[in-house]
Length: 165
Image (cartoon, rainbow, N blue to C red):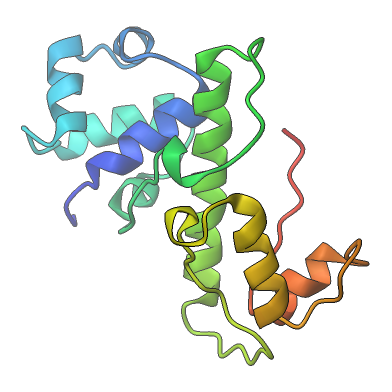
């Protein structure tokens, strides 16, 4: 069996909204062992990954996927003070799962687009508003409201997902 990607254990656990202590109860594997699996200090035996997969309602192959989890600093949203940290982790985990699925689906796709995505630094342009102006200029978007943000993103080769969080 291929090696377990420790980040997939974290991702599945956070998507389910459970702590390591809760996972310990579900799988009957000691908390400290689970913690070492997630930190990459121990490799996960086949029997343990099967128990973890069952508890987290994922196929064993899910945990063999290559891929990286991006933390909240790579995702932007309006912060809601009333949203518990556990719920935000679940949302970010679901976004990461969608991103990994899209990556797998699009890996072999050839996408032709009129525009492309650029990484523009706020420190270089001074403000988010200036970055938005620069993107409007690069993508040749008119001033004022954008008729379809989805169309603008898709014309740059982006993929837009509808998610009910």
